[in-house]
Length: 461
Ligand code: GLY
Ligand code: MN
Ligand code: MN
View (tube, rainbow, N blue to C red):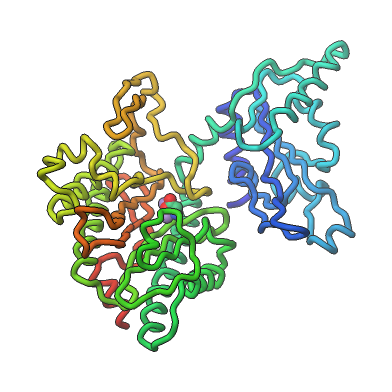
C-alpha cells in the first residue's frame, strides 16, 4: 500500500462521517508479558488500515474534510538505542502522506484544539480501555474554552460502523496480500504433513510441538511477521477440543492430526485447517468421516456466491453433515427422526457445535456486520430447540464480491453411549479461505491438498 492509497481510504472515511465529523483512532497498547518482557507488538488493525504506521504509542485524527494529523513517539536518541528507530513527528507527514504530526506527549494540549468546531466526534466504541474517558476529558477542555469562542462537539458516534463496512470489502491490494499469506500458510501445512510422515517412518518421536516448529519455520522463512492466531496442532482425540493449542502430546501412528494454523503477512491473516493421518494413510473409519466433512465443505463452497446469504454455506454444510450422521450411525434414526428433524432440533450439535464461517481480513475473526444493513428491522423471535431460549433472528448478510470468509465445517466425535466405537476420539475440520467473486468464490488456500487421496500421495512422497 502506498501513502496515496491510505490517503484515499481516509478520504472515503471522511466522506462517510461528513464534514462536521472528526475521528480519533489510537493504535494498540504495548502489552507486558512478564517482568521486562513484552508480548510481540502488534498494531491496531483500524489504525493500520488508515495510515499503515506500525509504531506503538500513536494516534490518528481524521477531520471531516479528509485532512489528518498523527501523534507519534518523539525522536529520542536514548530510547532509540534501547528500543529501536522512531520515525518522529518531523518526518511523519512526508513519509506517511499526512497533513500534520505532533509528539504524542503533546496530545492532551493539542487534541482540544483539533476537536474545536466539529459537531460529532467519532472513535471505536468498546475496543480501547479508557478511551471514552480520555475523549470526555478532551471534550471538557474544549467546553472550558467556550467563553473564548470554542465550539464543543455535541455527539459521540461509533467509528466501527463506517470502518467495518469499508474493511469488509477487500480491494485488489488487500486481496493480493491475502493470497500471498494464504500461499505461505498452505506451504506450511504441506511441510508439517510431510515432516510428520517422514519422522514416523524413521521411527522418531513426534510431538505436537515438532509440527508447530515446522509451521513457524515456514511462516518466518517467507517473511510472515507472526502466526495470525495461536496455532492448533492436535494429535488424536485432542482434535475434539476446539481451542486446543500446539502442546507436547505424542503424535501416534494410526491417529489423525488436526492442524489449524495460518500466518499473518503485512497485517493480513490467513486461516487454514487440515486433518491428516499421522502415518500418511487414513483408516476406513477415519476416511468415512473425512469424506463426509469434505462433502459438507464442497456443499458450502458451492453455496458461497454473490447474492447468497452469509448463513447459506453453513446451512449447506449442516444438511450434508446431518445426513451423514444418520447414514454412518452417529445418530440413531429411531431416536432423532429424519434429516429435517435432525436439523430443526439441532440434534447434530454434539458432533458439530461451531459455525462454518467468519469474515477474514486484518483480523482472523475480522470485523464486518453479519446482518444485512437494510434489513435490521426484520427481527423475528425464534425458540432455540436445544436451550429453549428465545433468540432474535435477523436476515443474514448478503454476500458480495470482495468479501472474504472462511469455510470450515468439522465433525468431533467424543466417546458416548450409542456412538459407534470406531469413530471415538476422531476430530476433523477442513478450513479454506474464500474470496467472493463475481460468479462464485475463489479458494485461496488450496496450495495444500484437501482430497484424502491427494493428502496420502503428498505424505508418501
Ligand atoms: N483459527 C480460528 C478459526 O478457525 O476460527
Ligand atoms: Mn477460522
Ligand atoms: Mn482456523
